[in-house]
Length: 382
Image (cartoon, rainbow, N blue to C red; front, side, top):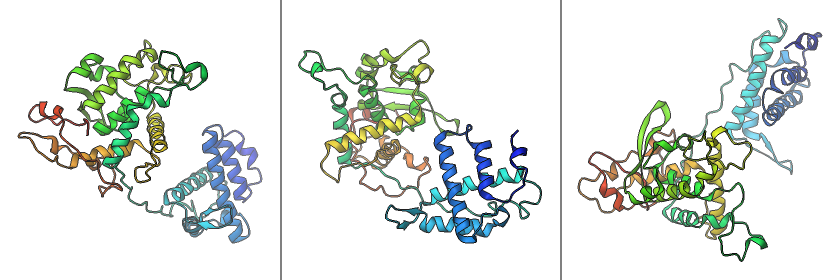
């Protein structure tokens, strides 16, 4: 803030000038270039709108009425296409504009000369737009089947296809950063247990029981102990057959090559990535990239538009598990608690409405007959 006194020597009343000072002194170098650019664009839009409506950009003329009118303008005509046509802006995007404008006026209120904002911060009395209820999406049974078919063949999508890699007896090598077995294990784990992406990346290898790949394939009751969830909760999660076998394959073939003396996480980033975290733990955002990649492979393989997924997100897999657990199996064995699993949509913050596609059909697997009374096993092959 050392340059603020020199920059405000004239105590001018220009919104554009104050916005530039705010960006130079409080945003650039503090926020990322991408975020700083977005903030600048949002403030420029308000300045241009104010000049277009009032003929000037005097900051002392900005009132809550003007801010509310800008909010309503964005909600109705905020997006401008290449052909000049305008469309409505999403409520969340409008609120993001208001948040950046509010941050600007909060900064100006602290650093401006006395009397510049005689009426106080004009953004404080302007309400945000009400956001619509989040749309719950769960995969249909047909989509789950084709997704699992792609997962069964995922290694082939990452193999090198050059001439020198073809024709040999050994299986072709995969791309240097690709970890297809890890990606398959993560998708099967979320689809079979409903874990959140942060819960997946927070897992440590010592939470897996058993952790030996051979034992993991042999036993019918593997589990993850002490899974840390929202609200500092901790629970035990049981694994179905698909998740067990996928994790065993990853532990056996890929994880040893990425692990070092600091690696505690169950799922690791590729050691060839120079920017990976110490120890190799994945970030929650990387799960988005992994799941979206599986969705793109699925849609490239699927000609049926009814089965295509569009942008696949980890929460879609979580909802698929949640809706699947709400449907009772076709045949119920005595003393079985499989149908009593709590749907994940009840605790994820989403409105439990009907999914956009039919929920996947569930069937009882042999693993569910081996559970103890009072325990609920989740996951397994559909």
